[in-house]
Amino acid sequence: MKRETTDNSDDFRGSKLALIFDGKVLVYKRDDLAHIPFPGSWDFPGGGREGNESPEECVLRELKEEFAISFPAARLSYKRKVLSIDGRSNSYFFVAHGFQADVDAIVFGEEGQCWELMAIDKFLCHPEAVPALVSRLRDYLDVTAG
Image (cartoon, rainbow, N blue to C red; front, side):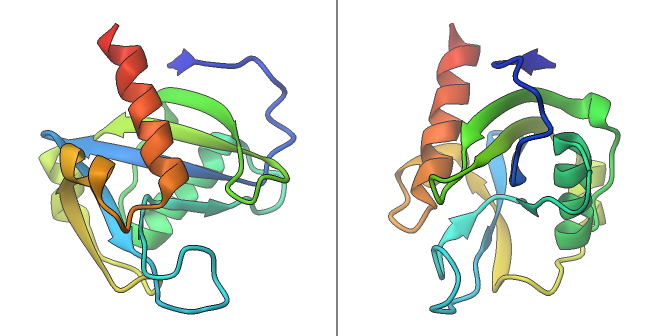
């Protein structure tokens, strides 16, 4: 796994995952509720930390809860500690590459309006994509291109 930082992973609020499959990324449209951040925006799987879970445990639990997809942490190919979207704490951004079996296993959870495999280029310029995730995915693509 490519690591961008060596910081202690005990200090974080949550984790997000860009699951890439055949030039597309798994996204879901957030609920359109005024009390949540980025209502109605396109988001990646992930969410808040529970208990003392590691960043990897957090993101894989969220992926299972939101999409019914399970795989081992060894499939996470990229990890980066980032400032959380609220700007007050740390979080982690991961990337993994999906397989057809992952797509076939999807059962969309109770959060969000709908999901799709969105072309990466479309996500990067989508006006309703969560801006911090656009930036993080661009950074990942820049690092892996070079």
